[in-house]
Image (cartoon, rainbow, N blue to C red; front, top):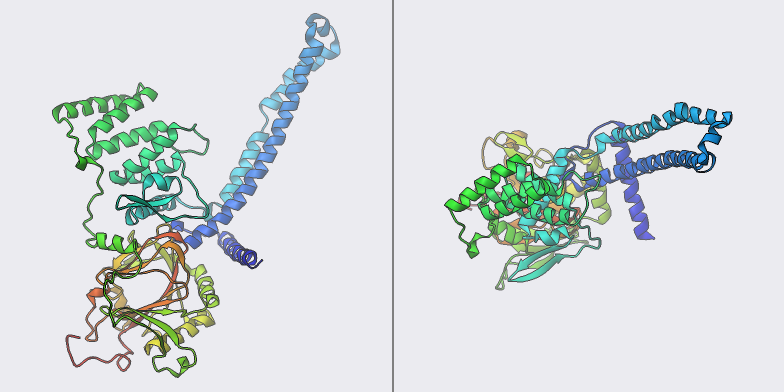
Length: 546
């Protein structure tokens, strides 16, 4: 009963938000960057299902009427017209024949009812169009699947079947087994492969198009599909050519010709592939398999992905500097209810405060943030812009937004001793991640004097206090690259670290990342505390290098 009421409450909250969005005619926009936005869109599909059911009912009645007319005319011919010469001598029979051919058949053949039914369906669809995903969402969702494939080393073949598996030391490991398994269709795989293909990412294109060809080959084309076996073969052949596998490109082109013998472009490609193979015969080696391209912009990719695939730091020896305790920070407000503190790292200093907020408080913060969720941005020179290396939506909450926000800010001050009031602390930023939502390795503090972080005129970001407002089933850890530390999202807990040394210089060891969410709905709240206003809270050291 309790679970049912929770689901009902969530459905009602989503319904209220869906009504608000559609009433104002505003597009959700960049839906794939937030699971909350995706949940809202599911309500639109529920409405579309209702519209489609109505259309089917109307069409069924129309077709039953057509079928009735067919039966009536057939029976006339079977019974009355069996003796044609005699029947036509009857003026009533003759009249009914002429009337049917001149009137009834025209009414059936040129009936506008089918068009009106379809127009009604289209009108209903268009009324919801502003709340539906755009092409960018579809492409972003496909890129999210490929990101999960890479970071968690997932087998595409298993992923297509709804399984999250990877190969570890020659063994297939089930990363997570969802309660509901959703296999992908050939058309689904074709779309993902096509997104990669159009981005000239032939490494991913080959893998996904291979699955598309396999699935298309064992099924018939369906009304709702965009792709086909021929298109998948065409894209796959060229993708193999671009990866240097000319033999496979030739083989697939020959297969494509069986389906489309008159395709002149494929015939020309065949001649080119044969010539290339004659000039440079393929050398089959163990290293000729498809290889993932190197990256130039993410130098810490291997470490980042390894940490995302594991939890906690890779500590092999006992370290007395890492400990757990009940922490009060000598704050009278915490004497009766100290916070469970877990020191995870010393360099950099990273602490996890367990049960920092209550579940009801986390829910209030999430609900307050939903109306203001917008695509998250990242600093780019003097500006802030959306970027593929940060996939999420965020909203900023002032103390006046909800009583819980001010309460949480005061609790942060008790724990850290820092002045978190604006502008010394930024407003609470609430973040909801999307499909494969992540934030690649970055610093929270500004690394350039031209950074927009200085617009508050309160110095650089001294510290980060990040609250996990939800847990996730898999993925979504916070990885500290140089500290060799990966912290899973522990619901209602909070992570704290210093971004700056006491001398005001940035701490390079705080390079961190939000790992892609594999399964789940990840919410966090960030409180960034700036230098100004902390002069007596975190004093400078006598050591200028500290």
